[in-house]
Length: 379
Ligand SMILES: Cc1cc2nc3c(=O)[nH]c(=O)nc-3n(C[C@H](O)[C@H](O)[C@H](O)COP(=O)(O)OP(=O)(O)OC[C@H]3O[C@@H](n4cnc5c(N)ncnc54)[C@H](O)[C@@H]3O)c2cc1C
Figure (cartoon, helix red, strand yellow):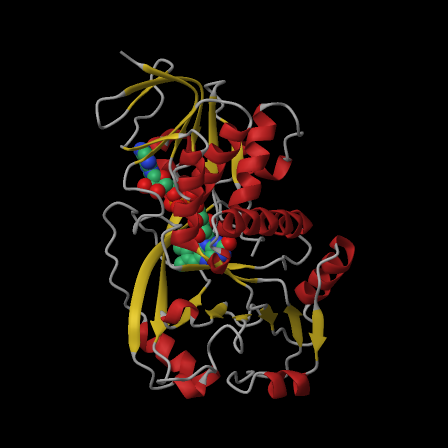
Protein backbone atom coordinates (compact mmCIF):
# COMPACT_ATOMS: atom_id res chain seq x y z
CA UNK A 1 0.00 0.00 0.00
CA UNK A 2 1.44 3.39 -0.89
CA UNK A 3 1.89 5.85 1.97
CA UNK A 4 0.29 9.22 1.32
CA UNK A 5 1.61 12.63 2.27
CA UNK A 6 0.94 16.18 1.19
CA UNK A 7 4.64 16.57 0.47
CA UNK A 8 7.68 14.34 0.15
CA UNK A 9 11.10 15.96 0.41
CA UNK A 10 14.03 13.98 -0.96
CA UNK A 11 17.39 14.89 0.53
CA UNK A 12 18.03 15.96 4.13
CA UNK A 13 20.95 18.29 3.53
CA UNK A 14 20.52 21.90 4.55
CA UNK A 15 18.12 22.74 1.70
CA UNK A 16 15.88 19.69 2.11
CA UNK A 17 15.84 19.76 5.92
CA UNK A 18 14.71 23.39 6.02
CA UNK A 19 12.22 22.80 3.20
CA UNK A 20 10.61 19.92 5.11
CA UNK A 21 10.56 22.11 8.23
CA UNK A 22 8.79 24.98 6.46
CA UNK A 23 6.37 22.76 4.52
CA UNK A 24 5.32 21.16 7.79
CA UNK A 25 4.90 24.63 9.35
CA UNK A 26 2.55 25.47 6.47
CA UNK A 27 0.22 22.73 7.72
CA UNK A 28 1.16 19.87 5.38
CA UNK A 29 1.89 16.24 6.20
CA UNK A 30 5.52 15.73 5.17
CA UNK A 31 7.91 12.82 4.65
CA UNK A 32 11.65 13.50 4.46
CA UNK A 33 14.03 10.91 2.96
CA UNK A 34 17.77 10.74 2.81
CA UNK A 35 19.84 8.02 1.20
CA UNK A 36 22.82 8.36 3.57
CA UNK A 37 21.40 10.37 6.50
CA UNK A 38 21.09 14.09 7.35
CA UNK A 39 24.38 15.97 6.71
CA UNK A 40 26.22 12.71 6.04
CA UNK A 41 29.92 12.62 5.17
CA UNK A 42 29.26 12.61 1.43
CA UNK A 43 26.75 15.48 1.54
CA UNK A 44 27.78 19.05 0.81
CA UNK A 45 26.27 19.96 4.18
CA UNK A 46 28.33 17.33 5.98
CA UNK A 47 31.42 19.21 7.17
CA UNK A 48 31.90 20.53 10.71
CA UNK A 49 31.54 24.22 9.90
CA UNK A 50 30.28 26.71 7.32
CA UNK A 51 30.67 30.48 7.10
CA UNK A 52 27.69 32.76 7.65
CA UNK A 53 28.45 36.09 6.03
CA UNK A 54 26.21 38.85 4.77
CA UNK A 55 28.73 40.28 2.26
CA UNK A 56 27.86 39.45 -1.37
CA UNK A 57 29.08 42.44 -3.36
CA UNK A 58 26.20 43.78 -5.46
CA UNK A 59 24.19 40.54 -5.15
CA UNK A 60 21.93 42.07 -2.55
CA UNK A 61 19.39 39.25 -2.65
CA UNK A 62 21.93 37.00 -0.92
CA UNK A 63 22.72 39.69 1.66
CA UNK A 64 19.03 39.83 2.54
CA UNK A 65 18.66 36.05 2.54
CA UNK A 66 21.72 35.68 4.78
CA UNK A 67 20.21 38.20 7.22
CA UNK A 68 16.88 36.37 7.26
CA UNK A 69 18.57 32.97 7.54
CA UNK A 70 20.78 34.15 10.40
CA UNK A 71 17.67 35.04 12.38
CA UNK A 72 16.01 31.66 11.66
CA UNK A 73 19.16 29.69 12.51
CA UNK A 74 19.50 31.55 15.80
CA UNK A 75 15.82 31.03 16.70
CA UNK A 76 16.13 27.31 15.98
CA UNK A 77 19.32 26.96 18.01
CA UNK A 78 17.85 28.99 20.90
CA UNK A 79 14.73 26.78 20.92
CA UNK A 80 16.99 23.70 21.03
CA UNK A 81 19.03 25.26 23.88
CA UNK A 82 22.10 25.02 21.64
CA UNK A 83 23.03 28.64 20.85
CA UNK A 84 26.66 27.52 20.44
CA UNK A 85 25.77 26.02 17.05
CA UNK A 86 26.34 29.55 15.75
CA UNK A 87 29.68 31.07 16.78
CA UNK A 88 29.61 34.80 16.23
CA UNK A 89 33.29 35.25 15.50
CA UNK A 90 32.69 38.04 12.99
CA UNK A 91 33.77 37.89 9.36
CA UNK A 92 36.75 39.83 8.06
CA UNK A 93 37.15 40.77 4.41
CA UNK A 94 40.61 42.11 3.59
CA UNK A 95 40.42 43.44 0.02
CA UNK A 96 42.92 45.52 -1.86
CA UNK A 97 42.25 49.29 -1.95
CA UNK A 98 39.77 50.16 -4.71
CA UNK A 99 38.34 46.62 -4.89
CA UNK A 100 34.98 47.00 -6.66
CA UNK A 101 33.34 44.18 -4.80
CA UNK A 102 34.24 45.78 -1.45
CA UNK A 103 32.65 49.05 -2.53
CA UNK A 104 29.49 47.18 -3.58
CA UNK A 105 29.45 45.18 -0.36
CA UNK A 106 29.61 48.31 1.78
CA UNK A 107 26.80 49.89 -0.27
CA UNK A 108 24.63 46.79 0.21
CA UNK A 109 25.39 46.77 3.96
CA UNK A 110 24.32 50.41 4.26
CA UNK A 111 21.16 49.80 2.24
CA UNK A 112 20.17 46.62 4.06
CA UNK A 113 21.21 47.73 7.56
CA UNK A 114 24.03 45.21 8.07
CA UNK A 115 26.44 46.25 10.84
CA UNK A 116 30.02 46.64 9.64
CA UNK A 117 33.30 48.34 10.52
CA UNK A 118 36.04 49.57 8.25
CA UNK A 119 39.62 49.05 9.32
CA UNK A 120 42.73 50.73 7.99
CA UNK A 121 45.82 48.69 7.14
CA UNK A 122 47.39 49.78 10.45
CA UNK A 123 44.27 48.81 12.40
CA UNK A 124 44.20 45.42 10.67
CA UNK A 125 47.78 44.69 11.64
CA UNK A 126 47.24 45.80 15.24
CA UNK A 127 44.00 43.89 15.70
CA UNK A 128 45.04 40.66 13.96
CA UNK A 129 48.75 40.07 14.55
CA UNK A 130 48.25 36.38 13.69
CA UNK A 131 47.40 37.27 10.05
CA UNK A 132 49.95 38.51 7.53
CA UNK A 133 48.17 40.71 5.01
CA UNK A 134 49.75 39.96 1.64
CA UNK A 135 49.91 43.44 0.18
CA UNK A 136 48.28 46.72 0.99
CA UNK A 137 44.86 45.85 2.35
CA UNK A 138 42.02 47.41 4.27
CA UNK A 139 39.38 45.65 6.31
CA UNK A 140 35.60 45.32 6.15
CA UNK A 141 34.47 43.55 9.29
CA UNK A 142 31.00 42.04 9.76
CA UNK A 143 30.60 41.69 13.56
CA UNK A 144 27.36 39.70 13.22
CA UNK A 145 28.78 37.09 10.87
CA UNK A 146 30.44 33.91 12.02
CA UNK A 147 30.48 30.15 11.86
CA UNK A 148 27.59 27.69 11.72
CA UNK A 149 28.25 24.19 13.03
CA UNK A 150 27.04 22.65 9.81
CA UNK A 151 26.57 18.94 10.43
CA UNK A 152 25.11 19.42 13.90
CA UNK A 153 22.99 22.33 12.67
CA UNK A 154 21.31 20.28 9.92
CA UNK A 155 20.73 17.40 12.31
CA UNK A 156 19.08 19.88 14.66
CA UNK A 157 16.76 21.09 11.87
CA UNK A 158 15.75 17.49 11.12
CA UNK A 159 15.14 16.83 14.82
CA UNK A 160 12.94 19.93 15.03
CA UNK A 161 11.07 18.91 11.87
CA UNK A 162 10.43 15.42 13.31
CA UNK A 163 9.25 16.94 16.59
CA UNK A 164 6.82 19.06 14.58
CA UNK A 165 5.42 15.97 12.85
CA UNK A 166 7.63 15.27 9.81
CA UNK A 167 8.23 11.54 9.13
CA UNK A 168 11.91 10.94 8.40
CA UNK A 169 13.20 7.81 6.61
CA UNK A 170 16.71 6.75 5.72
CA UNK A 171 16.17 5.52 2.17
CA UNK A 172 17.15 6.40 -1.38
CA UNK A 173 14.27 7.63 -3.51
CA UNK A 174 13.68 7.01 -7.19
CA UNK A 175 13.03 9.73 -9.72
CA UNK A 176 9.28 10.51 -9.92
CA UNK A 177 7.46 7.69 -11.66
CA UNK A 178 3.77 7.95 -12.52
CA UNK A 179 3.06 10.31 -9.64
CA UNK A 180 4.86 8.11 -7.11
CA UNK A 181 8.27 7.73 -5.61
CA UNK A 182 9.69 4.36 -4.67
CA UNK A 183 12.24 4.19 -1.88
CA UNK A 184 15.13 1.73 -1.61
CA UNK A 185 13.36 0.34 1.48
CA UNK A 186 10.51 -0.80 -0.78
CA UNK A 187 8.17 1.92 0.48
CA UNK A 188 6.01 3.59 -2.14
CA UNK A 189 5.23 7.21 -1.39
CA UNK A 190 2.41 9.19 -2.96
CA UNK A 191 2.19 12.91 -2.48
CA UNK A 192 0.67 16.08 -3.80
CA UNK A 193 4.13 17.47 -4.26
CA UNK A 194 7.71 16.26 -4.32
CA UNK A 195 10.78 18.36 -3.64
CA UNK A 196 14.11 16.99 -4.83
CA UNK A 197 16.77 18.70 -2.70
CA UNK A 198 19.57 16.32 -3.58
CA UNK A 199 22.48 18.76 -3.84
CA UNK A 200 25.26 17.28 -6.04
CA UNK A 201 23.13 14.21 -6.77
CA UNK A 202 20.52 16.19 -8.70
CA UNK A 203 22.16 15.63 -12.12
CA UNK A 204 22.30 11.87 -11.41
CA UNK A 205 18.57 11.77 -10.69
CA UNK A 206 17.61 14.05 -13.59
CA UNK A 207 20.47 13.50 -16.07
CA UNK A 208 18.76 14.82 -19.17
CA UNK A 209 17.61 17.97 -17.46
CA UNK A 210 20.50 18.80 -15.16
CA UNK A 211 23.73 17.25 -16.40
CA UNK A 212 26.01 20.19 -17.19
CA UNK A 213 23.64 22.58 -15.46
CA UNK A 214 24.77 21.47 -12.00
CA UNK A 215 28.40 20.49 -11.93
CA UNK A 216 29.82 18.93 -8.76
CA UNK A 217 33.47 19.86 -8.18
CA UNK A 218 35.99 18.39 -5.76
CA UNK A 219 36.90 20.76 -2.91
CA UNK A 220 39.47 20.16 -0.18
CA UNK A 221 39.44 21.48 3.37
CA UNK A 222 42.29 21.31 5.91
CA UNK A 223 42.19 21.55 9.69
CA UNK A 224 45.48 22.44 11.38
CA UNK A 225 46.23 21.95 15.09
CA UNK A 226 47.13 25.10 17.04
CA UNK A 227 49.74 25.15 19.82
CA UNK A 228 48.73 23.77 23.24
CA UNK A 229 46.74 26.39 25.12
CA UNK A 230 46.88 28.89 22.24
CA UNK A 231 43.76 31.11 21.98
CA UNK A 232 45.02 33.23 19.07
CA UNK A 233 43.08 31.21 16.50
CA UNK A 234 39.93 30.68 18.59
CA UNK A 235 36.75 32.63 17.71
CA UNK A 236 37.30 35.32 20.39
CA UNK A 237 40.47 36.47 18.61
CA UNK A 238 40.25 35.03 15.11
CA UNK A 239 37.30 35.90 12.86
CA UNK A 240 36.36 34.13 9.66
CA UNK A 241 38.82 35.53 7.11
CA UNK A 242 38.27 35.76 3.36
CA UNK A 243 40.59 37.07 0.69
CA UNK A 244 38.81 37.12 -2.66
CA UNK A 245 41.38 39.62 -3.99
CA UNK A 246 43.75 36.62 -4.16
CA UNK A 247 43.23 34.38 -7.26
CA UNK A 248 43.20 31.27 -5.12
CA UNK A 249 40.19 32.67 -3.17
CA UNK A 250 41.53 31.49 0.20
CA UNK A 251 39.44 31.55 3.33
CA UNK A 252 39.97 30.47 6.91
CA UNK A 253 37.76 29.67 9.86
CA UNK A 254 38.73 29.90 13.52
CA UNK A 255 39.39 26.87 15.68
CA UNK A 256 35.77 26.09 16.55
CA UNK A 257 35.08 23.23 18.99
CA UNK A 258 38.85 22.68 19.10
CA UNK A 259 38.76 20.87 15.74
CA UNK A 260 41.61 23.01 14.40
CA UNK A 261 42.13 26.11 12.29
CA UNK A 262 40.35 25.52 8.98
CA UNK A 263 41.85 26.58 5.65
CA UNK A 264 40.42 26.10 2.16
CA UNK A 265 40.42 27.60 -1.32
CA UNK A 266 37.16 28.60 -2.97
CA UNK A 267 38.30 28.20 -6.60
CA UNK A 268 36.63 25.23 -8.28
CA UNK A 269 38.35 21.84 -8.32
CA UNK A 270 37.90 19.00 -10.86
CA UNK A 271 34.61 17.21 -11.55
CA UNK A 272 33.55 14.87 -8.75
CA UNK A 273 31.14 11.99 -8.12
CA UNK A 274 29.45 12.39 -4.70
CA UNK A 275 28.82 8.64 -4.29
CA UNK A 276 32.14 7.14 -5.28
CA UNK A 277 34.65 10.02 -5.42
CA UNK A 278 37.87 9.49 -3.47
CA UNK A 279 37.97 11.69 -0.38
CA UNK A 280 41.65 11.71 0.46
CA UNK A 281 42.93 15.29 0.23
CA UNK A 282 45.99 15.86 -1.97
CA UNK A 283 46.64 19.61 -1.62
CA UNK A 284 48.41 19.64 1.73
CA UNK A 285 51.71 20.99 0.40
CA UNK A 286 50.02 24.00 -1.17
CA UNK A 287 47.92 24.59 1.94
CA UNK A 288 51.02 24.49 4.13
CA UNK A 289 52.89 26.90 1.85
CA UNK A 290 49.92 29.23 2.08
CA UNK A 291 49.95 29.06 5.87
CA UNK A 292 53.64 29.98 5.92
CA UNK A 293 52.82 32.97 3.73
CA UNK A 294 49.77 34.32 5.55
CA UNK A 295 49.56 32.65 8.99
CA UNK A 296 53.25 32.17 9.83
CA UNK A 297 52.62 31.00 13.39
CA UNK A 298 50.92 27.93 11.87
CA UNK A 299 53.60 27.17 9.28
CA UNK A 300 54.64 24.00 11.14
CA UNK A 301 51.20 23.21 12.55
CA UNK A 302 50.22 19.55 12.25
CA UNK A 303 47.32 18.59 10.03
CA UNK A 304 44.67 17.22 12.40
CA UNK A 305 41.92 16.52 9.86
CA UNK A 306 41.13 16.98 6.19
CA UNK A 307 38.02 16.56 4.11
CA UNK A 308 37.03 16.35 0.50
CA UNK A 309 33.60 17.78 -0.13
CA UNK A 310 31.93 18.91 -3.34
CA UNK A 311 30.37 22.09 -4.57
CA UNK A 312 27.28 21.68 -6.75
CA UNK A 313 27.82 24.59 -9.10
CA UNK A 314 25.31 26.22 -11.35
CA UNK A 315 26.65 28.19 -14.30
CA UNK A 316 26.97 31.48 -12.39
CA UNK A 317 26.48 30.47 -8.74
CA UNK A 318 22.79 31.36 -8.43
CA UNK A 319 20.63 28.71 -6.78
CA UNK A 320 18.18 26.50 -8.66
CA UNK A 321 14.74 26.64 -7.01
CA UNK A 322 12.09 25.90 -9.60
CA UNK A 323 9.42 23.51 -10.77
CA UNK A 324 10.42 20.55 -12.93
CA UNK A 325 9.39 21.50 -16.48
CA UNK A 326 7.71 18.13 -17.14
CA UNK A 327 5.98 17.48 -13.80
CA UNK A 328 3.73 20.10 -12.24
CA UNK A 329 4.10 18.67 -8.76
CA UNK A 330 7.88 18.17 -8.74
CA UNK A 331 10.20 20.91 -7.50
CA UNK A 332 13.97 21.16 -7.59
CA UNK A 333 16.06 22.88 -4.90
CA UNK A 334 19.82 22.91 -5.24
CA UNK A 335 22.81 24.52 -6.86
CA UNK A 336 24.23 25.83 -3.57
CA UNK A 337 27.46 26.50 -5.52
CA UNK A 338 29.83 26.69 -2.58
CA UNK A 339 27.88 29.36 -0.69
CA UNK A 340 24.44 27.84 -0.09
CA UNK A 341 24.68 26.51 3.45
CA UNK A 342 23.96 29.69 5.35
CA UNK A 343 20.85 30.28 3.22
CA UNK A 344 19.13 26.97 4.04
CA UNK A 345 16.42 28.58 6.21
CA UNK A 346 15.57 31.18 3.53
CA UNK A 347 15.60 28.57 0.75
CA UNK A 348 13.06 26.42 2.61
CA UNK A 349 10.91 29.41 3.49
CA UNK A 350 10.95 30.76 -0.06
CA UNK A 351 10.11 27.40 -1.62
CA UNK A 352 7.24 26.75 0.76
CA UNK A 353 5.79 30.22 0.05
CA UNK A 354 6.41 29.89 -3.67
CA UNK A 355 4.47 26.62 -3.79
CA UNK A 356 1.59 28.34 -1.97
CA UNK A 357 1.73 31.31 -4.35
CA UNK A 358 2.63 33.69 -1.51
CA UNK A 359 5.80 35.06 -3.13
CA UNK A 360 6.57 35.72 -6.78
CA UNK A 361 9.19 33.50 -8.43
CA UNK A 362 12.68 35.00 -8.34
CA UNK A 363 14.03 34.87 -11.93
CA UNK A 364 17.60 34.29 -10.71
CA UNK A 365 16.58 30.91 -9.27
CA UNK A 366 14.79 29.68 -12.38
CA UNK A 367 15.87 26.63 -14.39
CA UNK A 368 15.85 28.80 -17.51
CA UNK A 369 18.80 30.84 -16.18
CA UNK A 370 20.90 27.72 -15.53
CA UNK A 371 23.19 27.42 -18.52
CA UNK A 372 25.61 24.68 -19.47
CA UNK A 373 28.58 27.07 -19.88
CA UNK A 374 30.17 28.07 -16.58
CA UNK A 375 30.65 31.74 -15.86
CA UNK A 376 30.76 32.31 -12.15
CA UNK A 377 29.55 35.70 -10.98
CA UNK A 378 28.21 34.96 -7.49
CA UNK A 379 30.82 34.37 -4.77
C1 LIG B 1 34.19 22.66 1.03
C2 LIG B 1 32.90 23.43 1.05
C3 LIG B 1 32.84 24.62 1.73
C4 LIG B 1 31.65 25.35 1.75
N1 LIG B 1 31.61 26.50 2.47
C5 LIG B 1 30.44 27.15 2.64
C6 LIG B 1 30.36 28.23 3.54
O1 LIG B 1 31.33 28.56 4.20
N2 LIG B 1 29.17 28.86 3.67
C7 LIG B 1 28.07 28.48 2.97
O2 LIG B 1 27.03 29.12 3.14
N3 LIG B 1 28.11 27.43 2.12
C8 LIG B 1 29.26 26.75 1.95
N4 LIG B 1 29.34 25.66 1.13
C9 LIG B 1 28.17 25.28 0.32
C10 LIG B 1 27.14 24.49 1.09
O3 LIG B 1 27.74 23.58 1.97
C11 LIG B 1 26.21 23.78 0.11
O4 LIG B 1 25.74 24.69 -0.85
C12 LIG B 1 25.02 23.15 0.83
O5 LIG B 1 25.44 22.38 1.92
C13 LIG B 1 24.21 22.31 -0.15
O6 LIG B 1 23.17 21.69 0.56
P1 LIG B 1 22.14 20.73 -0.16
O7 LIG B 1 21.10 20.41 0.85
O8 LIG B 1 21.71 21.32 -1.45
O9 LIG B 1 22.99 19.43 -0.56
P2 LIG B 1 23.54 18.23 0.35
O10 LIG B 1 23.97 18.72 1.67
O11 LIG B 1 24.54 17.49 -0.46
O12 LIG B 1 22.28 17.33 0.59
C14 LIG B 1 21.74 16.50 -0.40
C15 LIG B 1 21.21 15.26 0.28
O13 LIG B 1 20.46 14.50 -0.66
C16 LIG B 1 20.62 13.13 -0.34
N5 LIG B 1 20.26 12.36 -1.52
C17 LIG B 1 20.85 12.37 -2.74
N6 LIG B 1 20.20 11.56 -3.58
C18 LIG B 1 19.18 11.02 -2.90
C19 LIG B 1 18.13 10.10 -3.21
N7 LIG B 1 18.00 9.56 -4.43
N8 LIG B 1 17.25 9.75 -2.25
C20 LIG B 1 17.35 10.26 -1.00
N9 LIG B 1 18.33 11.15 -0.64
C21 LIG B 1 19.21 11.51 -1.58
C22 LIG B 1 22.10 13.04 0.04
O14 LIG B 1 22.38 11.92 0.82
C23 LIG B 1 22.31 14.35 0.79
O15 LIG B 1 22.18 14.20 2.18
C24 LIG B 1 30.51 24.89 1.06
C25 LIG B 1 30.56 23.67 0.40
C26 LIG B 1 31.74 22.93 0.40
C27 LIG B 1 31.77 21.61 -0.30
